Amino acid sequence: MTFKDLGLSPALVKAVEEKGYTKPSPIQEKAIPHILEGKDILASAQTGTGKTAGFTLPVLQYLSETKHPKYRPLRALVLTPTRELAAQVYDNVREYSKYVNIKSAVVFGGVNAKPQIATLKNGVDILVATPGRLLDLHDRKAVSFKRVDVLILDEADRMLDMGFVRDINKIISFMPEKRQNLMFSATFSNDIKKLAATILRNPVSVETAPQNSTAKKVTHKVYKVDKKQKTELAIKLIKDNNWTQVLVFTRTKHGANKLTEKLIKAGISAAAIHGNKSQGARTKALKNFKDNSIKILVATDIAARGLDIPLLPHVINFELPNVPEDYVHRIGRTGRAGAAGEAISFVCSEEVEYQSEIEKILKEKLNSSVLEGFEPTDTAPPKRAATQSKGSFGKKKKQRPSNGNPGGSTDDKRPKRKPHFKGNKPAGATSGRGRTGAPKKKRY
Image (cartoon, rainbow, N blue to C red; front, side, top):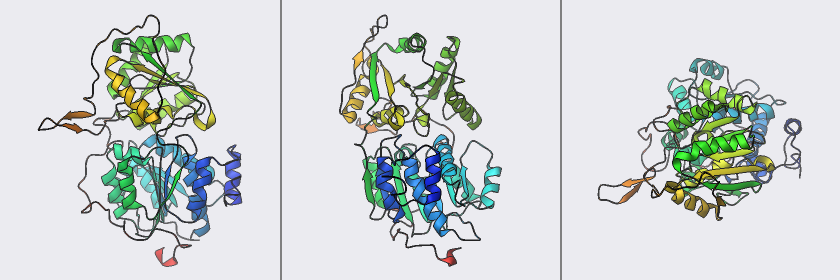
């Protein structure tokens, strides 16, 4: 099957082929026809399999076919959890829309809002945004959601993890009841399904890989090592194997900064990326990593989504994530689009429980070994303090994971807001959503 066979216009097919793609991926093949028909979608696909094009292409086609000759109200909105993912999605939108008369823009926090306000004032057809900055702009009356025809939630599970559900519901409350809704993510938890039930209407479920699966060409390796020896082991592996591009994950921002400093002292070029870094610093670090100006990018889980690095050969879990599903997203940065990749994890005695939980969701054992000279001697028991704490009556109470970003910027982790609506269902979530042709002229 080709992109033309899916019903895409010649202009979009031309743009896709110029990117080097001739055959749609499984998620694109399954989702695009349904989206073109105006149906709501609940899509789960392994990261790196083309989810972005899966919703971008059909939405661009809809916008180009129903565009008003004079007015440009915002008609398609893409919400993402992080700035990096927003920037990546926006880049894809620009590339795929080069041969159609569609205006697009991206807005996120950490940068001056004035240029974003000026861009929105000139009119855009499709907007990619993080929830925090988008609500700020709405409060300033710089953007209106009254004519949105299509809402896309990208990496919806991460948005829930980061506490964006109130912001999402508030944004939805400002939208027309009749619209198309697309929810895309690598995994879907029970919480995501509950959210989907309040937003989607008679959705088509699309899944191209088992939930919590990783790319087939990614090899997994675990090194058992003492907590205090992890940095030394990382330096040895990088130097001995002459690795030139490695994405390293830590659980905290402080840990990312500390490891980066030690790598640099060891003569290894490195940079850190996390929620406390300015947007300029994050953009620069990612650019330098992509063009191989630095060898190592040390990141918290905020970077597990939205980092599209072609042919990234190695990912190191310096610390295992305390939420097992996050392992899938971290590892999803390598082995993308059918390429081979290697996922290496350093596991100390305190993390054996995390490893067991990861193996449970992957339904496979991770190969463990001990490197000579790094034989572990720690006997510290497994810790669960990061995800559980004692309640007032001594019962264990689950805590939302920090994702390496406790107290981070308002864009990456929004403070709790008072719900805009009463009850569990957001305003505008009970009526029909499907499209029935071009928008009525009176809506402009």
